[in-house]
Amino acid sequence: MGSSSKDDSGSDGEASSGDAPPSNSGLFSEGERVLAYHGPRIYEAKVQKAELRKKEWKYFVHYLGWNKNWDEWIGTDRLLKHTEENVLKQQALEKKQGVDKSSKPGRSAQTKPKISTDAKVDKEEQKNNVAKGKKRKSDSGIEKDNFSAEKLVKIQIPSTLKKQLVDDWEYVTQQDKLVKLPRSPNVDDILTKYLEYRSKKDGMMTDSIGEILKGIRCYFDKALPVMLLYKKERQQYHDSVENDTSPSTIYGAEHLLRLFVKLPELLAYVNIEEETLTRMQQKLLDFLKFLQKNQSTFFLSAYDESRASEGKGKGKDD
Image (cartoon, rainbow, N blue to C red; front, side):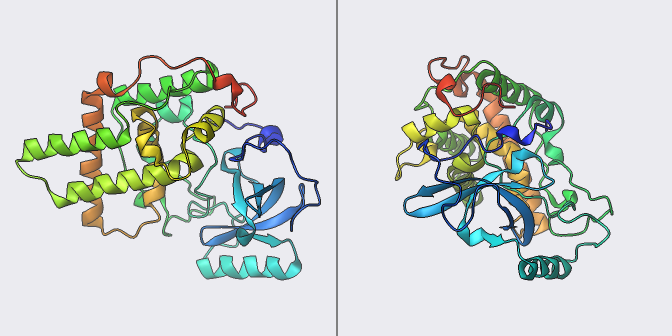
């Protein structure tokens, strides 16, 4: 990831209302140092923005010591005041999780926040082997916790699809272009086509394939607004996806492919037996080969120039 400065880390959010509340609004103030839950641990963070959304306060936080790529919007249920009592709670939680005291808080491979507000599929990440799942080994060498690099599902993305990811990044973040929505075929169509393809090839429809495709669809719908969009695509998302609409019926292969970059991190939180994990890995690779085989049909050859500049990103945001 690029080591962007923290200056624009609060420049993007999921709300389209531009009116920022007064700095002393809500339970927490803009600029306030806080403690924030992320997964099983508590991190030191700073409130960058506060917004009242649907009668609930939401806060855009920056995790202190982490790249701004991990900044995100969270609710009051995940925030604590930075008091001596809560710091002790943080330390007790770290001790319970078995964090080596000699390492800096939150620096181990297992404790890095997993959810980011924007898709951070940059050139460097695409050119490296995304299957490595961005190793997060700590200085103290802790590797054997739940989320060590060894437990990440390795998904080898075919080289032509890696290039597709790089081109995708280039179109949106450098050339101010967007994928024209709604897409056809959309994600649901592609999953259905793959199911038909496998059924014809295998002579039957296996339950396991159906379950994996359901899982991909579910992950896609949940992950898209949280971690699969670039800043410049957020306004388009708010304009295109209604509350009861599934993103998988609006978006296509371009955004589906981004999910496969994030899947190793997402699946690290799921308790899966090794044998099942191996089978799943094989099926995911087969699906990627299917995407590759149909690349010219599923993916756009050109993006739309009309509205990318209206997104909330400040110019070149990566």
